Amino acid sequence: MGNVRKTITFTEQQDQWIKARITAGQFTNDSEYIRDLVRRDQEKNADLEAIRTALIEGEHSGMSLRTPHDIRKAVQERMQNNGQL
Figure 1: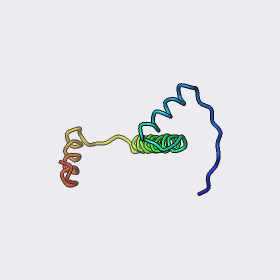
Figure 2: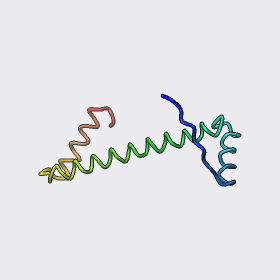
Figure 3: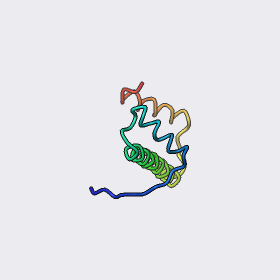
Figure 4: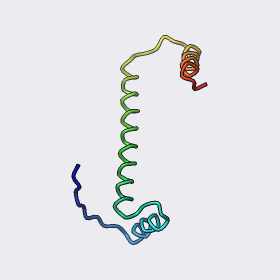
């Protein structure tokens, strides 16, 4: 995958923030910090899209005939089978 060079402008306060992260040893340079922010934003948006998709699927699946008790019991059984309880 190739690299694309970008020119961006920050306020003095934002620049100081980035420099502080680098000085603290969290990042080695400005580019690494910005790439980390982009990766986290991509992950966050992917998570939100997965939630949206699940909500849409749930809306289209119709009403459940199970009672809240039945649903809780099924979740507990699934968690026990997966070693989560």
